[in-house]
Length: 115
Length: 111
Image 1 (spheres, helix red, strand yellow):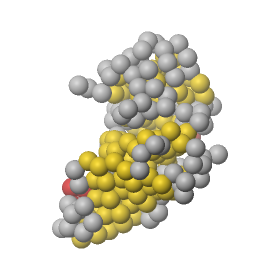
Image 2 (cartoon, chains in turn green, cyan):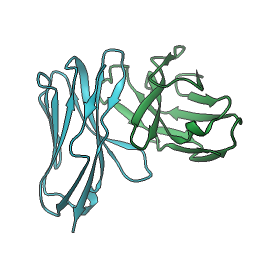
Image 3 (cartoon, one colour):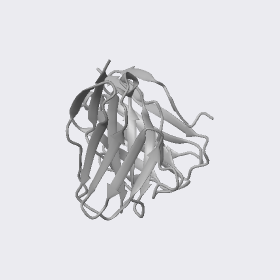
């Protein structure tokens, strides 16, 4: 059982380039999330999707867009990367927005560097 | 706005000692609280989930308590081992469905 799978694991971008981070879960969860983790700032919510077909802004949405492609997949797009977006990005999923029975599960992260 | 605090930020103990990790939150109207473990350069692994109606959860050497009214949770790890060295994060889920994280406690268990 793979859980939450993120690709790529590492990426280096030049300022102004665009890219999409992919996330897929195989637990039949309804809700999915994107977080970023920065030293001294902890984990902050970028966007979330309560269920297939819906997306909402989190704490730090500026500079990002998301797509809930289907129940399994939730992608995060950086249209014009900036050095301030250098971070570790985590995708997570849960049965429901309230967490359900087992709470949230996280992927292994994407380490993004913008130069 | 929900704020989650974990003190201390770092903790070093000799092997065999019990670990006590603290988490406090400002808004007691939560759905649940979840403890995670994060190894360097890795993702978050869920350890325990406590629903708002529960007082504690146990899994092996791990026990987590929840006192919603005082806004506190404690994670106990019995008989610590070097393999328990990691960063431990607590997160609360409240209205708005945001999982708000504490800053984490970095634990080192010395052989």
